[in-house]
Amino acid sequence: MKNILVTGAAGFIGSAFARYMVAQYPHYKIVIYDKLTYAGNLDNLLPISDEANYHFERGDIADRAAVQRVMQTHDIDTVVNFAAESHVDRSILAPDAFIHTDVVGTYILLDEALKHGVERFLQVSTDEVYGDIDEGLSLEDDTFAPNSPYSASKAGAEHMVRAYHVTHGLNTVVTRGSNTYGPYQYPEKLLPLFITEAMDDKPLPLYGDGMQVRDWLYVEDHVTGIDVALHKGEAGQAYNVAGENQQHNIDVVRQMLALLGKPDSLIKHVPDREGHDRRYAMNCDKLRSLGWQRQFTFETGLEATVRWYQQNEWWWRKIKSGEYLEYYKQQYEARLAAAEE
Ligand code: NAD
Ligand code: TDX
Image (tube, rainbow, N blue to C red):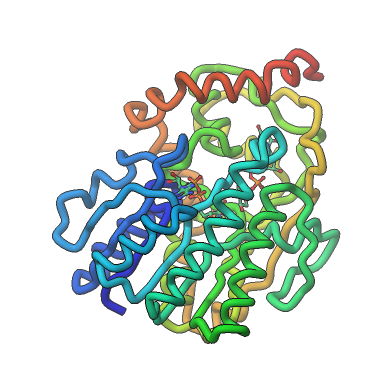
């Protein structure tokens, strides 16, 4: 591994991975390739933008000619694919971009990686491919049952990764992360949306009864999980990256409000997300057996996250304008009007 193409690394988890890799492996060349959609933000990469082993190229993973060019220019031997449309609610409102990037884009990246002789291809996937889990923990060999256009597109991408391994012998690894939170997360996801809205004393639109269960994973632990799978994972295998911290949404929100010193009365129960999965939970013994260990508890991770948003208003205030406000209105205006106390 010498020259690593990290796609989608102007986003939340990809930028954390890039910041970590640039510092951890000064002898690797880290080439970021990102379309800079609404979720891509060069501010996320400012801490490493002057480092000698960091390079940035703007482009779409579904643009074959551009992908070819970047692989050749930088003599890429390793690909880590974070690039995706990542928000479930947006996939319900407008699924086209999810098919374009998550499905077609992943296919083009795989195809060009194969042609270019890439030695390792890591696909960043999600616990949502397993679908709603009533009880127990999802294991890597469980069947897929994706329920949203987002998770269906991520499952489609994974099937293509598998096919390129089995059919063409491409050296692939997949990681399936659980709900990730931390600094630099775009304020459309539950925690950054609710932290920043609560700081302004705005109502917090909690879907349904708020009793859905998610497994919360701090972003820096997700990043080290991907690093371990990249370096030690067996070709053709998938690895769950879990927080082993399953909580009801309403409890997560209450803990966040306590850290901010804001009242629970900001919570408004609004009409539910369509097709809303009730519970995700994974077993991550397989990745642990490769030597991965989390460093953050939910208490330390949540506190670090809340303080970061308090201290970095420069980062998120400018995001909350233009397209963001249009999306917010479309997603929440009618829901908040129909809110129950
Ligand atoms: P994000 O939305 O913050 O960032 C996505 C990035 O991909 C952005 O920088 C965007 O500009 C870029 N991008 C989008 N379309 C592109 C295209 N066609 N070509 C090139 N770049 C493109 O997402 P995130 O939350 O950081 O998630 C990163 C990856 O991790 C995704 O693959 C997602 O499915 C997966 N994942 C996320 C979570 C989570 O909780 N956020 C959990 C598990 C897995
Ligand atoms: O306004 C909201 N109100 C609310 O009740 C939002 C945005 C979310 N929620 C609920 C829905 C979920 O049960 O909070 C929970 C978390 O929601 P999101 O932050 O939208 O995440 P989720 O839908 O669980 O998906 C996330 O985890 C898996 C990421 O967005 C995906 O990219 C990842 O694959």
